[in-house]
Length: 224
Image (cartoon, rainbow, N blue to C red; front, side, top):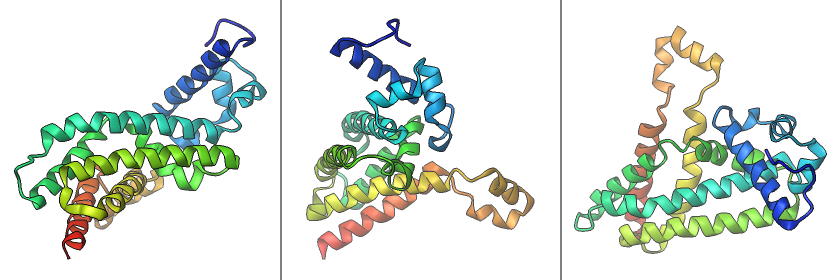
């Protein structure tokens, strides 16, 4: 919360803007994207909703910016992890499995990123202006580009398939996260009927398995 009542300078406006983002990030540590409301965000940051809307045009605009920040932090952490976890001398198939394992492990503790990615297309890209949408998409293209570079570095055999794999990886993270977070009703159904338990997904193991399959397929297509 800021100590001044009215942001008069550019510096104060930036401080207030960061306070809104910080508060929204804290809310996402304890709630899902769907549970974060503009009313509650305004209350926690200590501003009227109309004042929050002076800095961000909508709840979704706040969350898109948080997604970009979280995404950049993730890809900045990946180079070191991949350098340690992928054996440059190993065969391509083995490196592909190592790559998938490192990417999966790197998402441990990044609940906000996974939740925001899962809501990106269906929720966050709605209720924003074309300007905000375009700004976010430009940032997303750059973020995917960072992942493409890392993919090419550790799996050069992918050649022109690296961008396709990187983009698919991002989409799969969000999709698997969604399916690994079933509703309360579905959890009760799993407990009541053990025959349904096979449909219950664990995020880490399911994601790694899908990424291994995707990478193997991309390698096969690149070599054909």
